[in-house]
Image (cartoon, rainbow, N blue to C red; front, side):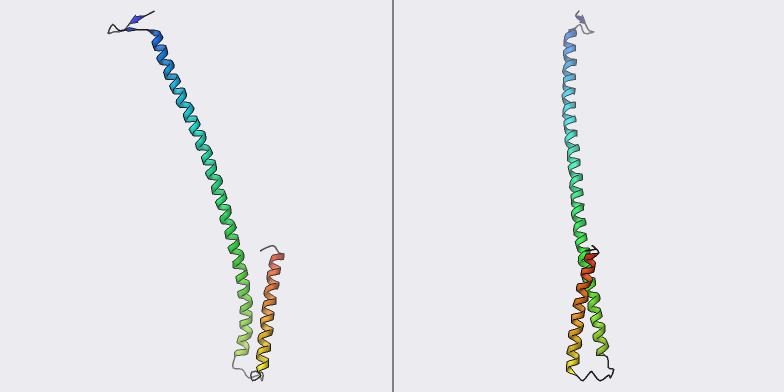
Length: 133
């Protein structure tokens, strides 16, 4: 059933069907490529999210390590301050009779040093027992 258009050009309906089929094939191919690209982008987005989560976990771990270090240093500072208080009490210009004895000075410093170290170790052990560190 061939027919003629306005310019008297002969058009075969089978050619129109072939053109339509080619357009449909092209559109289907493009849709397949777009769908494939979209799936790849979704996988990439998921990979990026997983990487962000991993980085955040690593940062949290490092932050926790810094907090533990800060706790130890703060505890050490506390006990060194206690040692400083004892030293300052004996360093005052108060006459009590022991300031002339060299042995008393050494004994007080050694005892305070040992007590400071023992108190620090006990505090760290307590912190670990409570699973804070």
